[in-house]
Length: 75
Image (cartoon, rainbow, N blue to C red; front, side, top):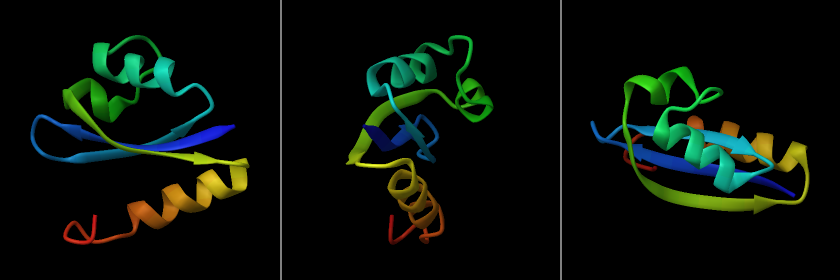
């Protein structure tokens, strides 16, 4: 099972990613642990906005790509 997720940062920006271990991944982003994204190291995560459960890596990747290409207003 894979997950695609959206996090809101303190500057109101959004970070989108995908993982197979959602609790561990969000924990890494929030506490800036080794393995967190470079973006979330410099932008403090304040909220989990959305999590989607996907059946396959292909579905998760397509969903992440689609979300990243939406306008800010559409997000």
